[in-house]
Length: 280
Image (cartoon, rainbow, N blue to C red; front, side, top):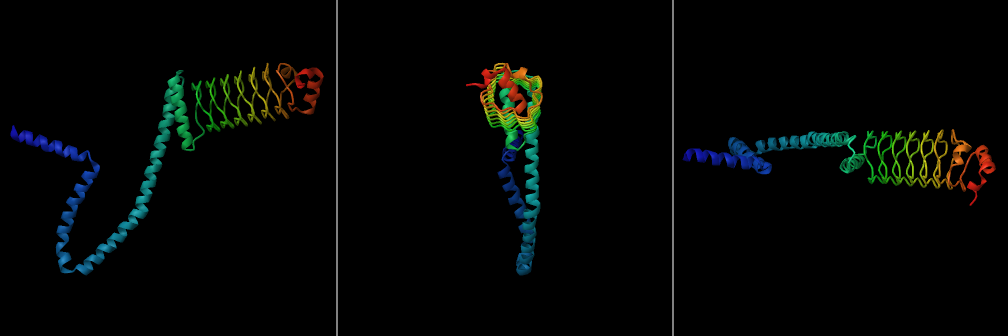
């Protein structure tokens, strides 16, 4: 019994040591140092000068190994860890996809911001629930947000350049000064959204709803606006020059067109048919 208890205590002590990597390394170093110095003692005593010269030569080789191989291995490990973290963040976004809850929304946004810190901005957010979240200043250039729910979210000065927003719900979202240049937002819902000074040049906004939206000083040059709904939308100082598919029928539903910029042909129609909307 006493022998068994002693063996158990020794095993527990060994386990404690193994759980402490620094202590384990120190013990191994001490053990190897005793063996190496013990075996080398006669060389020290017999021909110390030549033997010490060989030790210094080996030391130079060790420094070279640390400088080249050590740094390379460190870089590879760090790069591998970074790739693993990025893969984990993307996997978590996939896990929360289609889950309509506040927790899913905030966890997904957290992963998006972590990916941004790793300079990753092309993110797959199709069908993600991101309602009532803070995405201010986030970079989602080239991302895919088709059919995502971003209603009541904040995207102030966010980068959505060349982003896919087809059928995306952005109702009552705040996109003031956001960059949506070249975005694909056909069928998107911008109802009641704030798009003040937003940049939408060359964006695809076919059958997009801007009902009750605030588009003051928004840049809509060269956009594709076929079938877009501007009912009760404020287009004060908005720039719609070069817009494709824009008709006078769409503009008659707007709340105001005061100081808005149009191509000459559209401008003449506006002045002739709805002069009250271009007045103060």
